[in-house]
Image 1 (cartoon, rainbow, N blue to C red):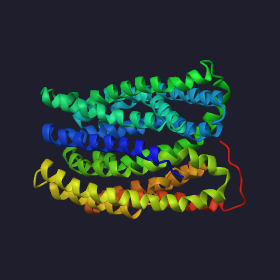
Image 2: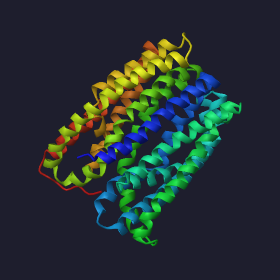
Image 3: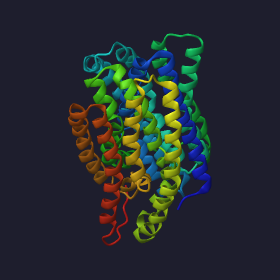
Image 4: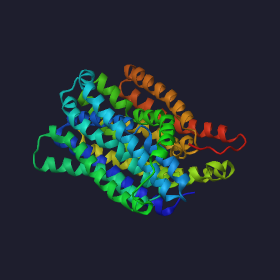
Length: 420
């Protein structure tokens, strides 16, 4: 089911992504203070949600549809171009919406630094949708090394920029400019890496024929993708609206680290995604292979989680003041326990979409997202930031488990070949 080379490439990407994210948090916290760290993470949270609107599910359509045409390079390229065109139109709409909605965001977060980051954020969103589609096209064509490189490039650019600002004593208020700079570099690198596919297919792509199917699948899968990203950031957004930048900074020091660990299952998922799609017409073979994948997930993820926890303890001792350390450690511990419990099923969070059931994936994610929002708000008022961490941790267990059970119920009936 999984390719060793693909696992290695994606793990290397994750290592760069994780180390870059942790190092960025450390530099921002030690050199510019928890307040700037909190504001920066709130801007990143808005960016991640906005990027989903900018792609409109086109990246998930590419991941699902391109492997189905693996023997037809012309149609693969036409599908990729169609998804890029759809994302370009949606990105323009998102930019206009950001320009119109900036006053509302300023009043919601009531943070001068968050307000300062909205203009660079808007510029980054102009490119983010297309970038997500091109990254998905690399994954769908199983170009794992190229995919891993692009995936690691964005956080690496941000880290290098933060370190340069620190060394040159540049004002921390300029940190938000790193978000659009990273997107521009990702755009340039993605275009270069997709050129071989374009050359093989010929520069003329009959993408108009694919737009309808791309749009149809995107509309079905978009709510689920949006909710998944919003769910991963709902804690920071809730705290940003209900608390101070300083409180968000301490919480996010822990949550961003553990969220990085929560991305590690994507190393496995990305390596097997195209193969799961191809096996979607053979439920018997798929369900025979998934237990091995889940066992591999536990064996691969749990030791990494434990080692990362030990590293995190040392990082907290070095990076935060004694008064801030207990909260950062407790938040991390709460969510990490949930990740360990769900380690084997975490790589299956996109299973419904991969099997051709994007609407059901969106419905499941919608229910669990609402439960998480309610949980974050209610538990924050009850036990503070620890309640928010608990709600988020439970959501890490609930979604992949729900997706696995629903997929089993759907494919347990007489085999039916699913198409976009």
